[in-house]
Each structure stands twice: as C-alpha cells, then as structure tokens.
Length: 429
Image (tube, rainbow, N blue to C red):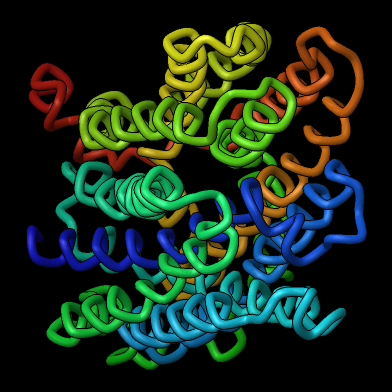
C-alpha cells in the first residue's frame, strides 16, 4: 500500500503542478502578454477565462478516461492522463505572445489549456481508485487520502518555482521568459512520474470484474440511466471545495497584487504557507473519516466554509500578511475536512463496474461549478469600490450552503465491518 500510495501521490502532484502553474501565471502575467489590448481588469478576466477552459474540459476527460478505466482497467488511465497533461503543459511554455503572432497566441493557449484539463479529468479517477480498491476497508479513507495530498504538493512546487523566479529576476525578465520555466520543467516531472508508475499492478476489484465478464460496455450510458441523480448531488456537494480553493489560490492572488498593492512574493508566501498546512493535516482528517464516517466530516467542512467566508474576505482586505494567512488557513482547513474524505467517499457511492466514470464525472463537474466560475465571478464582484469585496464572500457562502444541502442528501458509506471494529460493544452484540 505504501508503494501504491506513493505512486498515486506523485502522479497527482505532477499533474496538479501542471494545472496550478497555469492558474498562477494567469493571475500574474498572462493578461498583459496574451490580451494586451484589454484593460488590466478585462485582461485578467480574459486570462481567467482561458483558466476556466481547463475545468470545462475536465468532465470530458473524466468521460473519456472513465470509459477506459471501467472497460479496460484503472492502470492505463494513469499513464495516458499523465502523458497528455505533461505534453500540453510543456507546449504552453512554448507559445509565442500576442505581440509575436497576434490572435493565434490566445487561441493556442486556449487549446492547450483544454488538453490540460482533459488529462487531469482522467487522472483523479485513476489515482484514487488505485488506492481505494487496493486498501483494506478499515483504512480506505486513510490510504485514499494520499492522492489528495498531491494537489498541495503540486501547488507548492508550482508556486515555489514562480516565487523563486519572480524574486530572482527583474520584472522584465520574468515577463519575457521567466514565467515559461515552470511549464518547461513539467516535461521532466512527467517523465519521472511515468517511470514510477510503470511497475503498478491492476486493482483486485477490476481484475475480478474482468475475470467474471462483468465490466461495463458503456459506462457513461449506465451512469446517465441509473446514477444521474447521484452524479448531480456529488457535483453540487463538492462545488464549495473548488470554489474555496480557487478563491484562495487564484482570485485572492490577483486581488491582492492588483487591487491591494501587495507584492506577488508576499501573496504567494501567504497562500503557500496555508496550502502546506492543509496538505500536512490531510491524512489525519482521513483517519477520522475511517473512525466516524465520511458524511459527518463533509457536513462539518461545508458548515465551516459557510461561516468563514466573510471573515476570510475581511482578513484579506487588511493586506497584512499574517491576517491574510489566517484567513486563507481557515478556509483551506474547512476545505480539506471535506476533500480528505472524498477520495474514499465517491468510489464507495458507485458500484465497481461504473465507478471510474461515475466518481470522476461527479468530481470534475464540481470543478466546473466551483473552480471554473469562481475566479471570474469573484473578479467581477470585486471590480469596484474601495471597501472589502463582500459580494465575493456572499457568493462563496451561497455555494457552501448549496453544497451543504447536497451532502445532506447523500448516504453514509462507511463499511459496516469498519464500524464494528471501531465499536467492540457493537461487535459483541
């Protein structure tokens, strides 16, 4: 399990490095370089628009790779998704700017961002099923949480490189070529990830399905016919997690640098410190899910998110590093209370024959609802006025309440044998 968890964690870290480095670049430099005829606000919105395309393509990736995972196995998904995302990311770093090739520059950016999202849409389902379907029942949430640490590592790597480059280069050098370096580095990371995953074996549950001839011929059709309500509920439930994370990691970064005049180095440092703590507590939250259940923690995380959005925006507006850090940390701790659990929770909600498609589609539709829209909506809501952008806080609170309602309608999936193991009196009865 340690080797499997490490392979899943490293793979998701690499793919999310690819995905996050684009978000940071969109917040810091892509607007002026690829949309120079726009005003600063409009340029940022346009850059976030290309950022959103990656989320729109993620459900398509989950359908494509989910079909492969449910029909031919989880293992092929891990290779194909990582290869596609890595190639697309390296290509982003090679796209000439608007000043060189004109309108073709943002068009190419859009296409490559679409391919990034397509690959990432397949990665999550394959990575979590690799651990969830190998893990013992009483530790499933714990082992499945390791792929959920990957995004934190990917974010820290992406932003750490960006931070080092922005601090070590002049502004002209960073805008000329420095921002491209992390995209080029993605090629080396992808090669290392493919090498690590080359020795992985197929999951026992899929091998049983395949041996019995019970693999799904058309998993998406089965999901649309028999599980559409579950897909919509899981997408709505997870939307708040995406909205919270990208409000902190993308919108707040742009708002702090452009509206509050805080240096990008300070903003990145505040966000990175909060993300590092979030990643560190992930397995500890998962242990609680193996003890007390998945649904209670998800409900608690949603409620905490709803209560914290106004304080977070108020702390951000102070422009004081420690207060901004506390605001981000509170939001991300609420976020991980849900997302440390969902890698076990979502697969358990779906039957094994359509699990790769169902879990991935629900997870990535939530990305469209929460991740794609939030930077754009939040930037629009914070566009005018000198006071704190309370409209952003209100928007995030509404998303949290909607997600809370969706989680309330989902069942608990903690295996009964796990409950009996944790409760000796119940076991003896």
